[in-house]
Amino acid sequence: MSSRKEEEIYQEHVLDHFEDPYHRGELEHRTHVHQGDNPLCGDQICVQLKIGPDQRVQEAWFTGDGCCISLASASMLMQALEGKTVDEVRAFTAEEMLELYQARLTPNRQKCCLLSWRVSQAALFSPVQDGVDSGNREPAGGEQSGPHLGEES
Amino acid sequence: MASTDAPPLDANRYRQDFPILSSVLHGDQPLVYLDNAATTQRPRCVIEKIVEVYERQYANVHRGIHWLSDQSTDLFEEAREKTRRFINAPLREEVIFTTGATGAINLVARSWGDANMQAGDEILVTEMEHHSNLVPWHQLAARTGCSVKFIPITDEGRLDLEQLPALLTEKTKLVAFTAVSNVLGTINPVVEIVEQAHQAGALALVDAAQSAPHGRNDVQAWNADFVAFSGHKMLAPSGVGILYGRASLLDAMPPFLGGGSMIHRVTMHGFEPAELPAKFEAGTPPIVSAIGLGAAIDYLEDIGVDNIHHYEQMLTQQAHDVLEEVGGVRFFGPPPAEKAGIVSFTLEGIHAHDVAQILDQYGVAIRAGHHCAMPLHKRLGVAASNRASFYFYNTPEEIDALADGLRAAKRVFRR
Image 1 (cartoon, rainbow over the protein chains, first blue to last red):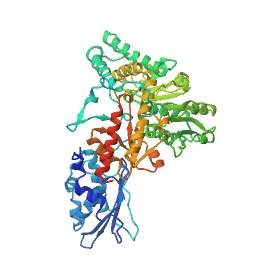
Image 2 (cartoon, rainbow over the protein chains, first blue to last red):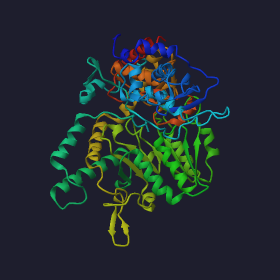
Image 3 (cartoon, chains in turn red, yellow):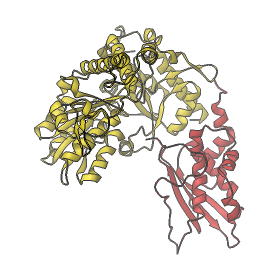
Image 4 (cartoon, chains in turn green, cyan):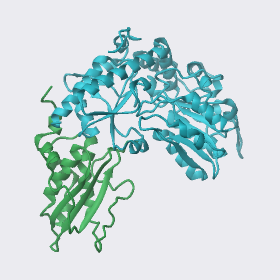
């Protein structure tokens, strides 16, 4: 029972991102920041972006806590966002996020994978004003795009 | 196992009655169903009863003059009588069919609560409540201005009943609490809490969703004013549940839902409500689900609810023993001897959802998350936990499979 399906979800590259994530930590001189959560599992992700005058993401960092999938996917996303223009980030779809993750996910776990993506989309609209983070909480219920299931009651 | 006594029941014999328990998942993994606190499976006799009613005896109840309606009505009322006996309620009209435990508690909150609660009044609940025995009271508080207070739990996961006398005041109108915690497995001292509530002049509502399927639930011995539970957690179809209420209270309460069945007479200007229990059963009830509940009760009584309780406690003890050996397991709740068949835990360094995901690949079904008890998880200091919950058809071998799955999770995550 050693090479079962769990290795499809918890593939080596996923575990690598989980154990040694890319840009997990606070970003100084961030220009945009947003935090969101999945109440179902208690996962929380805060995405912090530094967007240059050329409207390009210079740096992307995240903080937070959660399951392997939400943290590994956040790590992958931070790598992918850097260098993209704001328009390109905005155009980056949920489907593309799931492709980036590679491992096939059941609909329930897609929510974990899409948490950081959802937060990053909102971060574009959450500029830091005068050194004060604004809008770093989603409105109740969260604005959810892409595949998702209802929350556990 | 610690005891050399023969187990109180033969789980392998009863497993034969549950078609779904012979399922094989993912090609070669036998189903190990350990999510019984969420919902149980159904034995063939319940499934066959449902088919039989739909094929031969189904019509609407309490309406027709025709033969089929009489058949259906008789079966429906027979199920009410079986339920009355099962919980030892004095009167059949004190047994109200609802949509579930949630429906039953909301009925009390809307009907009794709206009529009796006002600003300044208090409802006492506990920190270990399921959302179904919490949110309706928050809603009632928002409507009436009353407030919701909490009996705290100790670090061992018991109710801190030393706090109870101070929490019970002349403002307390209702104490609403669970008989068994759906997360911690804690078996609460129902009689003692009801008695103290009554001494303070408050009513007592018992959420029996996790106790009714697994042991003796005697509403007269409890002296409870309201008792709520669900059919689907005790072998019956979903969509049916029970509210037991003291007749004198139910009589004084206004109807909750309005519609057919719940009226004595309707005019252009208003209505007169029907007698109990119809007063609280507006619309076509969950007819076949209720009849299925009657069949489930027959089956449970045949096994014996005390046997079920003792057998599950044995499984709980075994689960603590074998999971302890896995290493890195943190248990929630009191020692196994004080728990029902519910074992919640976290595995060090691995998120509850990742644990459940890997267990699933070994055919092991458990619950991961907050189990509809977010305030309790906040109190425990964890965002999510894993929960294995047993029924009389689970075997010691299945608990070993759970432990093996946890070892696999540790391997995957290199813990």
